[in-house]
Amino acid sequence: MNIRTLLGFAALLLALVLTTGCGKKEDAKVATQVAARVNSDEITVHQLNYVLARNPNVTPETADQAKREILDKLIDQQLARQKAIENKLDRTPNVMQAIEAAKSEILARAYLDQLAATLPKPATWETEKYYKEHPELFAQRRLFDIEEIAFVAKADIVAGLREQLSKVRSMQEIADWLQSQGVKFLANRGVRTAEQIPLEILPKLQAMKVGQNQLFEAGSERFQVIRVVATKAEPVDEATATPRIQQFLFNRRLGEVMAKEIKQIKEQAKIEYAGEFAGGAAAAEGKVKAEAEANGKAFAEEKAKAGGEAQAR
Image 1: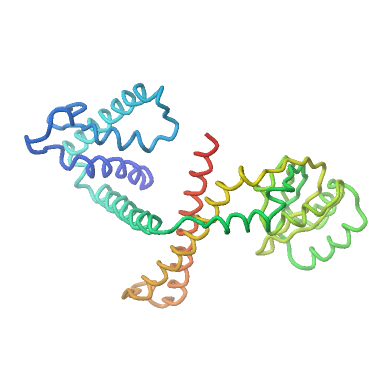
Image 2: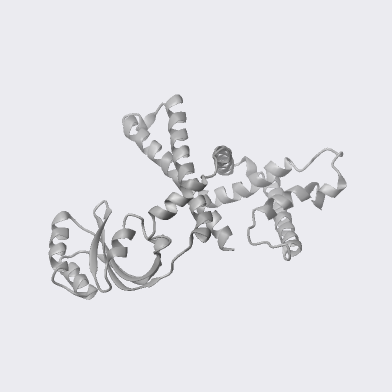
């Protein structure tokens, strides 16, 4: 059993443990709290509702069926848990390590959730300002049918490509030239909405004419050539955009606050690098800080995605 599988299994077990304890509660428990008994353990209505609340696809019409399906899964999970304990799997080093890792992740996320709960929602003037400052996302929003070639190359190749762009007309000619220079690339075509395009590229793409090619830098010697095949206007009015803007602004602020909070915690903590990491403590510390900031940003983006999916539904 690999560590990824163990972590997933441990997370399931831990979630069950956190909501049931050892499954042997006092006799004072009210009967209506019990949804099912699995040998000597109980599955409560609170557990069932906890899982149900985290299923965004459940509607009032499907709630009863969903509860039964969730209960069946909790029963299967409890049976597997009991067998794992019976076989003393909870005492094996890998499982113990996986449970601790899952516990750490749950507690860290709980702290970040608590931090998120303290943040105020964006003010009305902030959403109005963002709407006006980004017409390419809203009032002048478009769908873009584009062809793109992405590649990694050194400065001399890029300089040569810039010259070629003034001469060639088709993406095939660009692909042929890159191939002649020994550059590996990935070609693609598709329809992109304005919000699917990076903000640093979108205004430039908005200004391009149909049939025009342009070279964009993506960082770390990564580049892409984009050709606009066609565009279609699909504006979004302010009333429709407001909830999306509020969610975006909130999550952007959340990412900034989390990164700052993690940085402060690290500065106040006593962290000592040992063994093979002792020599590169400064570099390791920089890496950990970068990862902490990235985790905060990823967490904020995850919430934004969840909020967007909820709105779509």
